[in-house]
Length: 251
Image (cartoon, rainbow, N blue to C red; front, side, top):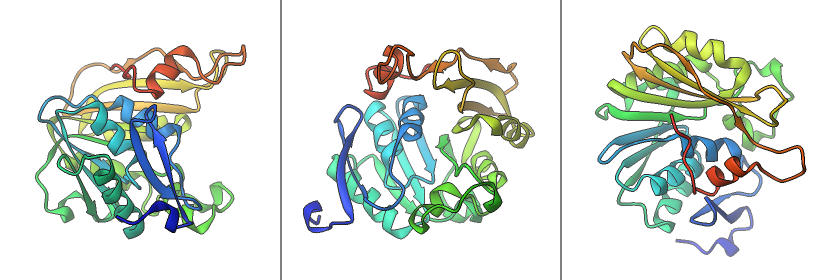
């Protein structure tokens, strides 16, 4: 493994209260709150197999693997440079025995991977699929922000990636919730939705969605996760515990 200090374009950071070391591009997309929430929302059990679509350098993937030591993980990433960093990060955190990285594009569909179906799938799909919807990001960040094939390609991948009774967990923009439910509903149900609000008196900006393939239970709207207190603390006590890995996001 190369010395991080010899590669100026790559930084080595720590997430999950320092438990996970993460090498990532200094100029490209950098892991943040969404990855931390997705990892916390992963509730894979002993011997479960989990796939993350669009794993980037492995921030959510490795944090989830650290939180769930009995499960095995595969990260799918289409950017070769990010995939290479994800492999390095898995080794850096002594997780290579339980975490594999596959190179491929979500738009090509799950069957193109030639893998057996998983018990669970998790993803933070790119937030935009219309280039007119936002100011163009830096070229190094475009793949993380823009879903070339649209959100439909990500939900279709999710539905093919898991077995019947398997779970699909997504973190996305709150204003895309209706689209997510519509796209998953033909083959999934038992939806559980947790809004993520910046403050208790502010609308949710993110939403965590968990669905079960072929699930039939009624939709459940869970209490919102409040990220900040108005009193000035960086995070609310609940959010701080979740981000540090001291608590999970219960479903």
